[in-house]
Length: 123
Image (cartoon, rainbow, N blue to C red):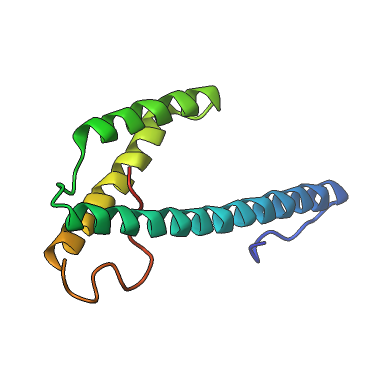
């Protein structure tokens, strides 16, 4: 709770309690998202190594398009703006491709795919 949120009435205190509770829930969801992304990124690294090993291109436009359409539909079903979901996935896909290119560039070295798990997962 921010320091400028000092309750002046009982009703204000109730509102601030509700804000605090909602913010705790948001913080928990943010933490879960980070952990889910980290797990997703582990699989992205695996996909990137497989692609590099077998000479496959880092990008797969058909798969990416399918994933975008799938997530847009899921977003609509969940009452989330499909355009927002698409922007989010497009960002992840761009990062995945970047990491797959890096893995392909370092294929054959013992360090391929090692490092922090911040590389997004496959689209």
